[in-house]
Image (cartoon, rainbow, N blue to C red; front, top):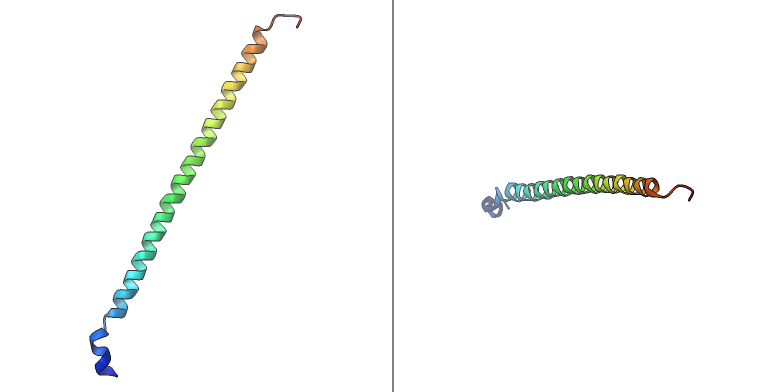
Amino acid sequence: MRDRLKGEQGSVIVMVEAFAVVFVMIGVALFFLLQSSNQSAAMERRDVKSFNVAEAGVDSAIVALEPPGR
């Protein structure tokens, strides 16, 4: 049995390292994906707030421009 395994002594370490590298790469990719998603959500919230403020300004201007007695 030992004679048969002599040629494969380092293969387990190589396979474990390969799996570790793959899992680390997947983890890094997920980290950057989530970071990008959070940045997109923050930008969308800021855009919606800006739109709401602009709409409130337009509504205020319309009310100010209406003739009295209306």
